[in-house]
Length: 274
Image (cartoon, rainbow, N blue to C red):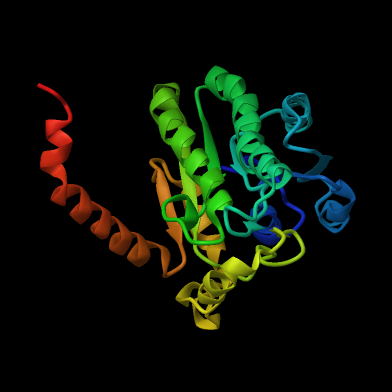
C-alpha cells in the first residue's frame, strides 16, 4: 500500500535521497526546504506524487500550515521524517550565544514543532509514524561537537517519552542514529565557531579520529533499504543505527559508563538517605 510521507530538509543529503527512493516505489512525498525551488527537478519528474513546500521549521505556525497543506493536497499523511538540521563545530567555550540558540532552534524546536503539528491528525486517524533523524552523537558525545550532541540528546529525550505517550493511539516513533556519511554534514550547511588557540590539539585529535577516516564514512545511498524497511515495519524499532560504527562505539562507551556507575553504587545508594 502506497504511503504519503513528509520529509523536512529534503533539498539534499539523506532527505533528498530518501525522497527519491519513496517516489521511485510509488509513494507520495511532501518535501520541505527553506527554498522549495531547489526541488524543481523532482517536482517535474513526479508531478502527481510530489509536493514541494517552502518551510522554516523554526516557525511553529508555518509548520502547522505545511502539515495542513500536505493533508489537503494528498488527502492523508502517514509518515513524518524530521530530517531538517545542521551541524555546529567548535569547543563549548568557542560556541557563541547566537550559534547555540540557532542550533537548538533548528535541531530541537524544529523537530518538536513538526512533531506537534502532525500528532492531532495521526491521533484522529489512529495511525502514523514519526521518524526523527537523530545521530550516534545523540547517544555519545565528542569533543568539539558538544552543542550538536546536546541538540540530538534533546531529541532523543522527548522522542523516547513521546513513544510511550502515543503508542496506544497507533502512532509509532523511530530515532535514526547515523554515524558519519558522505552528506553535506561537514560541508556548506555546517557552522564553525571562531577558533581559540587553546583547543587546537583537541581539534587535531578529533580530525584524525576513526570516525573521520575515509573507510568509516558511509555511503548515504546505502541507507535507502533500511529506511524503507523502517517505514514499512508493523513494529519498527525505537532506535536504529545506520552504518557500521555506531553500535560498536555505543557498546564500548556504555560499557565504560556502566562500570563507572557500578563502582560508585554504594555512594549512590547512601545518598538516598533511607
